[in-house]
Image 1 (cartoon, rainbow, N blue to C red):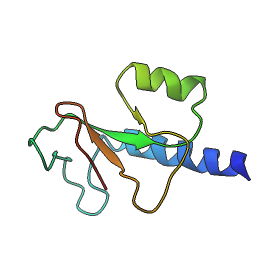
Image 2: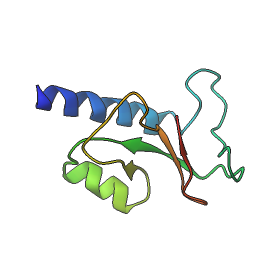
Image 3: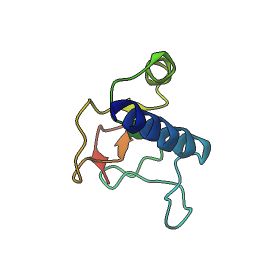
Length: 85
């Protein structure tokens, strides 16, 4: 079951990165609600594999840890550190 969850998280992450951090509802570029920056990356949850860890090192994704809940944020601002859904 954990492998399926991790696979789902990685698939969502890949789709998010491929859509260049656009709002999934409007298609607009994501903008940080705190500072207005467009330097926004997705947050990935679960134990990262090698590819995900490398993406995090390149600043393409923020690692959110192994636990995910309904309140967990989806986006991370690289400029100010804000996180939101």
